[in-house]
Length: 254
Image: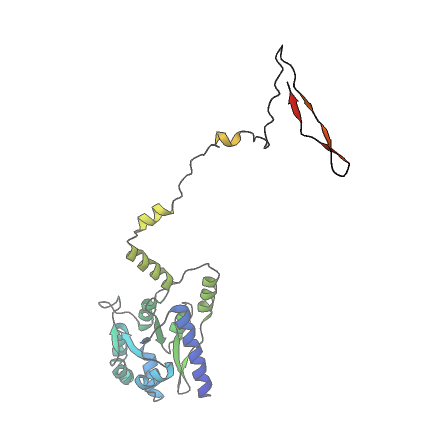
């Protein structure tokens, strides 16, 4: 069962690498519910995550997730100690903390531009994450870490890209980078995009002339002037050795 689960995880990771440009080190966004489940099931997140994902990982959380565990009291003190060991990523709620579920979804946005894996046991977060294309989801079931299969939103997004209906965020960013390298601004691109009107061209007048018939010109016949005798050609025949007649060359007499 463990080998089968590892193969499925490898297949899912390859899907996100190929279609959404995920690269190592993988960034795992973790909340307090996942840490609490790991503590309960005696799972060492820092040791087991790299083995399960078969690559280097960065474990991270947000300030809102830490504040939420502080407000919940002693019951989640162990989960708080685990979560404090991870990197704290900046969120937009530093001065006014919000619930961890809301904060995690705000970090993902509509397209997950920072390529986060999300590790949570919160069903509300799980349902919302599955609606965002390109977000790998991790949770704990029966003392094991499970990487969920690609959501239907991710599959639909890839199908739309293949049909040419959408451009992936990675492709959009690469297009912007190429434009910046070439020094092409947005206005220049819009100007170049406009089609130039072609000038109306008139046909060449020489091409409209009728074609002359090809052939040797016949020389005009000379008219005999008055008082001038007409030349006649006479043919003399001479005998050949065999007794036959042979026509002699014409001799012109005037």
